Length: 491
Image (cartoon, rainbow, N blue to C red):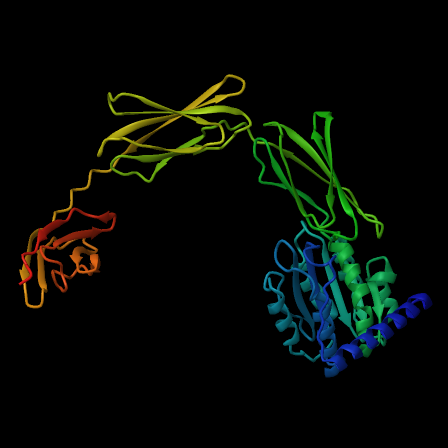
């Protein structure tokens, strides 16, 4: 049985939950509020040990499944978060699904609610032997959550003790008519938050307390250094606060020189921060302390070493080359350390060298006035604030000059009745996107566009001795056209 104070708290909490549920049901609302301390909070393994024997009624079994689904619903799943497995207890143990099967809540919820009861005997000892083989990852905290009616538990003391020796935390939920003394020996301390004896119809009142007990075990209190460069690093951690529950205090320093310590304060909703202006090839110690008036948190630490210094230009590339130009780019961009960049280029082997000087915040430029089909040597040099220079070269090839598109030919104008003129021309078959016609009409100068298949058209209402021009249209623009003058004098 639970202590009197705990029973009272559970009873009151159950009344509140019941009234709130009735309110939502009558209002036709479905509200799911996920605690802000659960999502992305944890990293560890949870193996459900579910009594599926014949001593558990079908109704009780379905209630246990729904309770478990609700209990685990807020957790983020996956190898970097929480892994969940389900092991059924029957005559022979059945691993319903392993720890790496479900990485999405939708999949886990469907699997939990679709579990079929085994029936048979309560061979808990054999199931615990299987649990020992499943919970083998020594890197992460591990929880065995045992859900049972407590009937015919068997010889469980030895396998439970072996699990505990391997660092597994054993939590138990019993549907009140079980052997409380055996369960009390089996559970991991503290008993008051790891052992729950509750009526099957009132299981919801322990959901929050049990979930919080699990969170305390598998909460990911770890600080990581990622994206480390020669002068910066990003620190990441699992959020344990919210924007209204506190803040983070961060400090870091050169491990060999604690006098260089820097200190910052971050909002409670933060989960990462970038450290800049670090020294290359230097080992740093960083410390992160969550500050909250709700509970005490441990200080997280990490040690990382920055990379060797990388001086620009470390890479030079060319792109967008044409017959007379090419773009040259380089990196990394270091405007705080570089005074200016100089780009020198000349045709290989003995072309005249030309020079372009650029500001420190620029990392690309277009070289123009180049010769078609020619190979150039391009050198990018950086002048640093301390007077040092660094250069890197690359070869660039311009494209061959494109052949000039053939001009239109044989434009003919034939006068017809009613001051109409038949316009005909010959043109190349390839590369033409259409034709542009201009002519003088009674209303002034008119124009029209014709598709590439056109080779003739008829124009009406032309002015006497009107000038007609036809130009080809290519992908790059309008080409050179031809013009003729009509001889349709007014009679």
